[in-house]
Length: 274
Image (cartoon, rainbow, N blue to C red; front, top):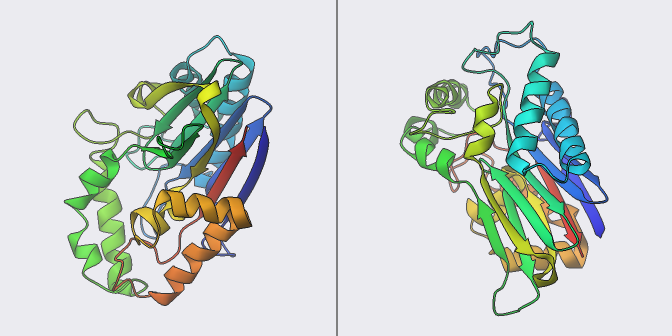
């Protein structure tokens, strides 16, 4: 497989909480859930620390245990990572968490797992099928009912910062709950709530993973559809998608056209051609 990766933090003075890694048979992308100023998470290490370790443990399991289901590999990785900071308060509702996309390639199949709002786009050999985007929209559905006060004030203002903190803390009550949404945090049972599937490898020409900071060109800004975004990636590389996102963000810095929690978000794009 041919793999290209691009990633960029929202701000140069803060760590990138997105993570991408690959082996010859697997690719994983994680997007950490940041903690807004004024909120506690019960962990002294931080989200970037958590995401890196969870991602490494997940890639190792997916690669080295081809007999093990992707959900079980993610559950194992969550358990192993939790043990690395057991001294932290892992029961805290804001304990570090992440979205997850994982793909494993076998001789016969492409196996995938998607948990929370990062996106996997699978490209098929049959042009009539077109690219198929797979994302877990449960977080967005819960958030839609809670984000009104945040979206009503300009991004970047003190009022928006306060509203963002309240929104994140309100969302925590619905995190990893049967009637809410699921993310990878400290409870391995969340892994079994992921979206999973298998596609015959002979029917696939490639796939692309994007964190929600990069997918916003399509799913929040609606400036492109997935075929157009993939053409941009294939023609100019995955960094071109990030540049297009940044251009749109800068044109709407106060969030009037596209209300959002963050004016800029961490971005990650991984694209694979088979």
